[in-house]
View: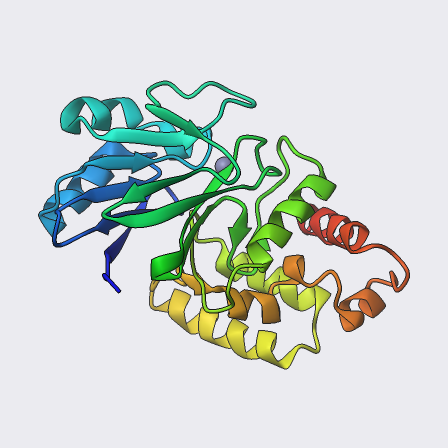
Length: 256
Ligand SMILES: [Zn+2]
């Protein structure tokens, strides 16, 4: 299997962008481009030339650098089908079950509305890599700006069905705050307690907690654990639907 290279860089107050590079063809993609200057310095540092831009959703911290980068590099831009807000500069609009080829590898599109209605995630089965945008975070999920809780729960379930070994790149370093919230929902989860300790030491040393692994999220992220008996017990929601439990957890987080 051909191995692509991944380089994550920081921008804004807590955003991550990722460069994907194929050493053979020299193709390079950038996932989300909130800051053109930061993307260009990351490209220069790696000595890679941008050929593709992948946009997950319309929010400015994911799109603000698009115009400048497209003019400077001529990169081809993949992004979501217009649902909520037009994104200037897309060359192709993608939605659920669409796919395209990057460096001879299939990239599958998973439409995950909830945070926004246009949100798409990019999944590379050959690399076991998912770019989850602002849908799934380490120990969290995106706030519901445009979608309903039910919509977001359906979206998260699409991601939960991917192979457990999938490596997940999300767009924000929210993990430490998410960790303390997760403990409030699931305080007796030993795997979660261990994970919080390791997150604390990583963040103390200013080391990113991203990427994460789907298996780790399934074991510790309360937003993926609406079916868990202990969490249902903790929330006094033994007989509710998973979507209702998810909605409750999302509401509690919004007020945490
Ligand atoms: Zn967003």
